[in-house]
Image (spheres, rainbow, N blue to C red):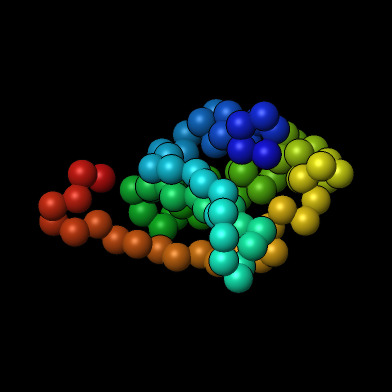
Length: 87
């Protein structure tokens, strides 16, 4: 879904600043995908995710049979940089 499916390309096309994207390999919350992206502020973050969720590319990708049941739920964590953070 990330690479072969075009999800990472879509993030890039929409201007997401990726720190990393990952698939969880073990644990009680599997299946689970992790997206860590940075945004200038909450408004930009919300607009970027809205554009992602409404994208025709995502609409097509998320209903493909091979990607069904790859995510159990969405947990959002907002992190804020420290004074020494690079972003």
